[in-house]
Amino acid sequence: MLLSWLHCSPPSALSWHRLVPMNLLALELFFVGLLGLASLSIAWVAGIVVFKLFKGQR
Image 1 (cartoon, rainbow, N blue to C red):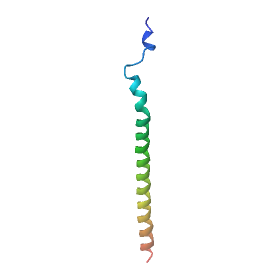
Image 2: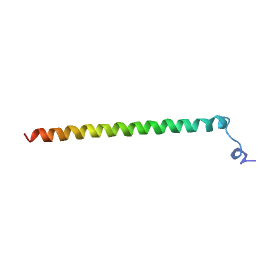
Image 3: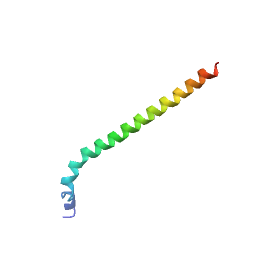
Image 4: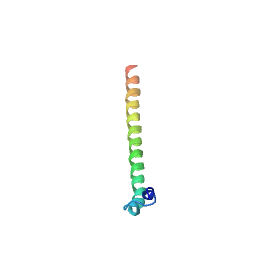
């Protein structure tokens, strides 16, 4: 009787499993977007550094 709460599911369990793939996709797209933004930022800074290095040699 004391452990009967282990066998019952929460009321929103049926709608929860339908939302999980969409939330995981949104989370994955968010972090892929952050990765792309970080990559572009690194490439931009690297380009500026290389440009200034070659400009300083003249």
